[in-house]
Amino acid sequence: MADTTEILAGLAEIVAEETGLDTAEVQLDKSFTDDLDIDSLSMMTIVTLAEEKFDVRIPDEKVKDLTTVGDAVTFIGAAQG
Amino acid sequence: MTTLNIRRGAEFSRIAGLGVARGENAVPNEDIIEPINSSDEWIRKRTGIVPRVRADEDTSVLDLSERASLIALEQAGVSGAEIDAVILSTITYPHMTPGGAPVLADRLGSTGAAFDISAACAGYCYGIGQADALVRSGNARNVLVVGAEKMSDFVDPADRSISYLLGDAAGAVVVSASDTPGIGPTVWGSDGAGSQLIRQTTSWLDVRDDRDTAFPTLVQEGPSVFKWASFKMAPVAREAIEAAGVTPDDIKAFIPHQANIRIIDQMVKQIGLPEHVKVGRDIVDSGNTSAASIPLATERMLRDGDAASGDLALQIGFGAGLVYAAQVVVLP
Image 1 (cartoon, rainbow over the protein chains, first blue to last red):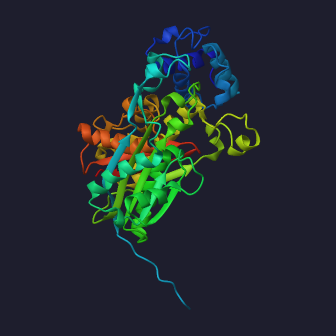
Image 2 (image 1 turned 90 degrees about the vertical axis):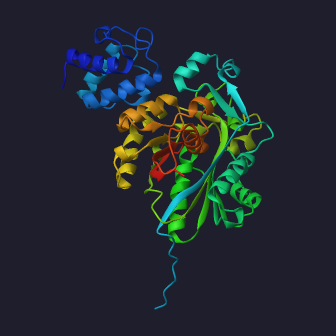
């Protein structure tokens, strides 16, 4: 199980790889769509890579609730239990 | 004890001829953005599509099929009368019965077995798998496989999920007996748990029972389909390469169903294809033509010099069902 900092760092790497953004721009309060300009298809790529990296399952219907990076970090942390 | 005779067919099969027919009109994004409140830029970024090809109103699925088939027959050097089986893959032939295949066979001068299959965007690869089996079993010597759609008959101009991607076209191949292996093992399957991800909006019975019900069209859960296709199909593609007894280095062309450029690009990444492999991207100019898209992309690659006759191509179809099929083939 990873802590918030580790999950954020891992997620930032995935987002950076998918979008070309710097990992430093991926912060907990950032909105995936409004701040990071990530569309729903890129979001699915990020989600899938996060599932693999953190060994969790993120159901498709939950993805729309992950508005911010923080939402995703919290979800992943809880899913890891 | 009485035993039955069985047929023994050719040891191998191959694709002997290819023909395509695209809808007569290249419909640019500008012509379809208003009802979906979108932009040319958004559609290009989201799908890669610049125009999609759509047929004239009086051009039918069978018209497109016939045009493509005549080219395939000529290239194969086979007459319509020599076709022992016609497999028509379509989800847009507007009759539940009779199927379109017997009518197409008749137009081509064939009285062979003829039947439609409903495997949506995987239909062409399903058809190739069946044709290969028919030839090698001895139940047919020449099989015509046609993927044909007039998707524009089943689109809702205001639908933002799939309609704006769709085009009209037919692709046909003749599969014949061969002295050398030309069609690798078909790796195929289904995932019916995802049956609602790409679907017809309402059943025909709903239309019968309530005349105010809108005519059925296609819709999809785009992001979920993207995830499934981009990530779940990569192992299927790799399995097809392995089943054919070749390596990724042997593959010259990757010709996936032309669903969306973003899916194609992600699949290439996930499969881990070598740099030298050319990738079919006909979607940019033809849109998503469902069962027709793989033969269309094949024809385009051969025409543009991105692939040549005799090259090994990995092809994979995937779509509504969910269903999928992949195989490595020798290009005609």
